[in-house]
Length: 192
Image (tube, rainbow, N blue to C red):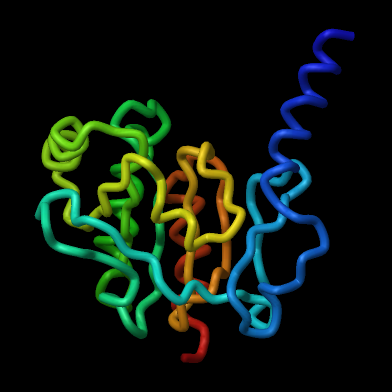
C-alpha cells in the first residue's frame, strides 16, 4: 500500500510538470513539454514538432562566451542535460561523444547543458573524458526555461532537435550509443 502511494506521488509530480492537452507545440509553434504519462522515450512526427527559438547560456569551457542552438543553424542538435555528480551522466558521456564523432560530418551537433553543478568539477569532467562537444554551464537550470514546462529535475535527459530546431525526440533516461545513434541518424536523414 505504501509503495502504491509512493508511486502515485512520483507520477503526480512528473505529471505536474506539464499541461495535458496543450497543443501549442504542434504545427511549427513554440515547443511546450507535455507530461509523457510515464513514457521515457517520446517521438514527435514532423508535422507536430514545436520549435525551440532560443536556447543559450555561458560556455562551460570558455567563461564569458555565450553558446546556444543559434550557433548550429541547419544542424540537428542533440541536447543533453547532465551534471558531473550524476552517475548515469558519467556513464553516457562516451556514448554521446561517439554520436558526435560518427554523425558530426552529417551535420549533427551534440550540445550539453550542465545543471546543478560546480564549474570546475564540470570542466574537469568534460576534459577528463576527452569530450569534444561543447556544453552550456547552467547551474540554476535557467536555460531549460526555453523548453517550456520541461521538468528541470530530470537528469540525464536528451532532446533531439531537427534541422529547423524543432523537438523531434525526447529521452528521459540514460542513453547508449546503440540506442541514440539510429534515432539521430533518422532525424539527420530527413529532408531539410
